[in-house]
Amino acid sequence: MTNDVGKTFLSLKDAILLMAHRTTDTYEAERQHLSEEERKKAEMIAQEQLVEELCQDNIHATALFSVNKKKPMKSNWKTQQYLKPRSERIIIPNDDWKREHILKSTYWDMWMRIPDKQYSKIYVSVDDFKQLTNMSLLGARGQYGNRFLYKLVDPECEELTSTDMQYLPPYIILMFEAISEFQIDKNNQPLHETLVEWFETQEVDGKKVSNNEAKKLASFVRVPSAQKGGNRPWKA
Image 1 (cartoon, rainbow, N blue to C red):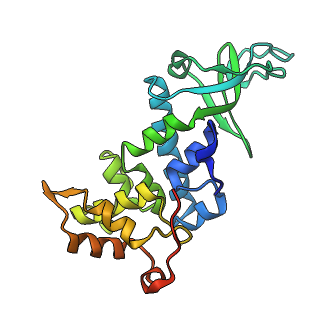
Image 2 (image 1 turned 90 degrees about the horizontal axis):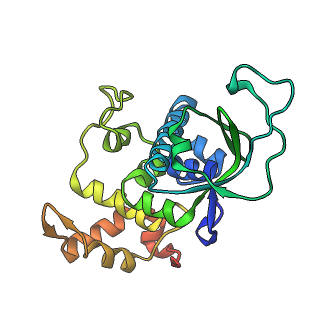
């Protein structure tokens, strides 16, 4: 995964992948899921969430756009092709996200078509995206792609079966929050002391996490090799 934090804008496609899987590497995303259907479900949930936020004007997207249609003209706007977009990038009005539209993905890009124009090379603000993902446990869901975490974010999710875990203890939820906060994965292992300090600022059931609890939680969110002294310093 590339370091997208330093960018001003993030492609909409990468934003969906990051929200769904915590990575823009499609091969890594595939390894996180039990099936192709599950991976697509995670991306669909992320896409729906992002579009809803764009409709509500909570986040903003820019794009190139075209209003010049290719010939022959089609009676169905959904199949109408457009000429090369204009060079200037504009903010997509949130009203356009509310209109009937089709949103498609290419290998590197995403485009959106509405009845009278087409947007391409769609990007969202990194600051907006970071704020959105910090507001929920979407990052935790994406990190693991577990079906029972869909329930945590989307209570109406119908993907759960009797074999899926439908209860998460508060300390488990807190660990997922830490994983999302520090972007922990097998290659990014924050220092134990850094995690302990963070856990000690948190509360569970209205009570501050004790130092002893914080130490245990900090150990549990790191890989065993890091607990044996092989930790990699985490850089802000």
